[in-house]
Image 1: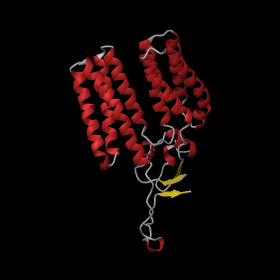
Image 2 (image 1 turned 90 degrees about the vertical axis):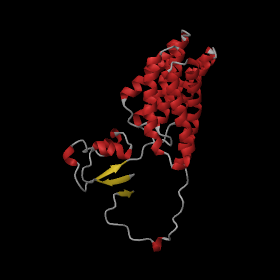
Image 3 (image 1 turned 135 degrees about the vertical axis):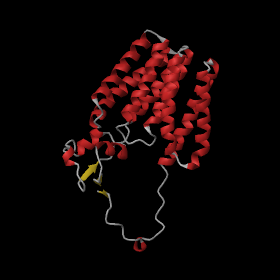
Length: 273
C-alpha cells in the first residue's frame, strides 16, 4: 500500500488520472474523501494496490473471441461448448468482481450479454451471435479497469472496435464502421505516447495500418476494409506484446551504493508501507 501526501490543487479527478485507479477503490480506503473539505494540503491518503486479474477473466475473453471464429466456420457445437465455459467461469468470477468493487451495473450488463449470446447461439443467428460475443470482450475491458493489469485495458477496447469494424464492413454498414474507426483512432492516439521510443518501429508500422484502414472505410472498399481489419487485429497482438515487455522488465539494481546516495529531499510524496 502507498500513502500519498495531498498537494495544492489536488482533487478526486486528479487522483483518478494520476493513479489510474477507480474512484471506488480510493473511497474504499479513505472513507472521508467524498467530503471535499477533507482534501487539504498535507493530508495523507492511502492508495490501495488493485487486485490481480482473476484467471476467469482471461478464459471468458478468449472464449468469446473463439466463439466468433467458431460461428464464422459454421461450428455451432464448438460455439456452444465455449459458451458453456463462459457461463461457468462467469459464475466463479462474480464473487471476485464484488470483492474488487466492480460496479453492479457492469456485472449485470455482462450477465445480460452472456444471456443474449446464449439465445442467439441456440437460434443459430450468425450476425447477432457474433455481435454479442464481441460485446462481451468490451465489457471485459470495463471489468479489467478494476484490476492490476500489465497491458492497458484500452488495448482490449481497440480489439473490440477492430472486430466491430470487420463485422460492419461485412454487413455493408459503412457509417457505423466509420464511427467505430474514429473511436479506435482516438484510443490509439492516447496509447501511443505510453510506449518507449525503442518500440517506434512497431508503433509506426501499426500507425500505417490504422491509416490504411481509415482510407479503406472512407472509400467503402469491402475487401480492403476486411483485409486491413484482419491485419490490424494481428498487429494488435504485437502491440500488446510490446506493452507486456515494457511493463514486465526487471528493475536494474542501483549503481550507487546506499552509503554514497544523497539524502532525499524533505518533500517526499510517496511512502511505502
